[in-house]
Length: 70
Image (cartoon, rainbow, N blue to C red; front, side, top):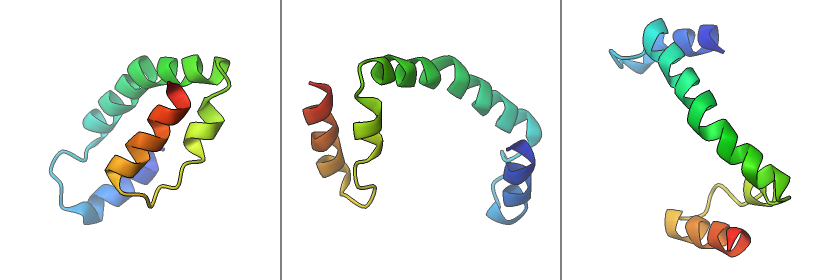
């Protein structure tokens, strides 16, 4: 994944797209996001949340997610 992100960085124009930043972001994802995903997966809600239409407006997507998680 890091290699793919570094290739993308060559055309993105962002100065913070470097290996150190990418590694830090991936570690943060593993530490903070994966446990949340695991929590909802154990409740059998993750798949339903991930199936929400990503083309929805943010407020619509939020409302759909709340319906599932509440």
